[in-house]
Image (cartoon, rainbow, N blue to C red; front, top):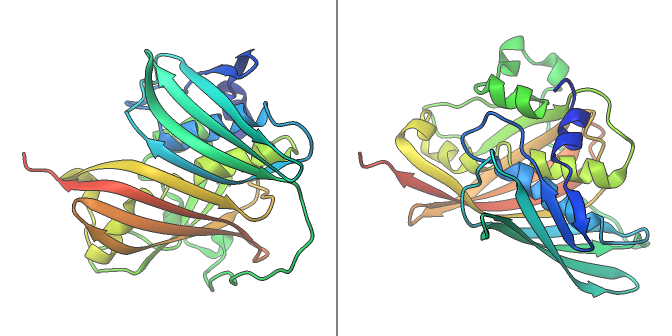
Length: 271
């Protein structure tokens, strides 16, 4: 695949019934990347929502690891259609077992008062050293065609925040719903590991069993993911083999695009 549009074309679920969809995964990967299923569920739900409504929030649970070699079936439940809001529930299944579920809320665009937190004062992606662009997992970056520029690096010294610039590679169709789905995929790219930053655990992925447990996104503004987006994450709490993480995403013009939360399993390996 040469662009993120190729990724979207591959993972976009095929509608096989009014509320029934089937999706594929890029390969090779050991288990399906959670951000991919987030995006696929949103794309499937979008196909059942008519009119000018856009997703404003989604709340999801990761239930089982997914097998990328077999199709994913998406069951969309059209719970509610109102004049201003709509709600969908999506269950993703493989071999008859649920691997993921999410609730998605949609809203029409309305007028109202406005405020938002300002973008942090960080270097722009083009001003950062080339070494900050080197991916720890180049196969993942190529598989999903996502470019990452680190503002912060892993360190043995405790850090309060993790900051990265992200963008997708290549041109992408100008469709707000597609860009939201791409942003949903990006939100799972850095969030999980943030709870290790206050600990100063540089090699956390070697010494711990890690897995996303749940994930929430609030979409504030329509994103353009073909340009760099700053993703700042922090972790206010960890305990009981779980780490709680929060994130915010801004475009380079300083507009707050979305907010995220996630709890992850962060269990030390005992053997």
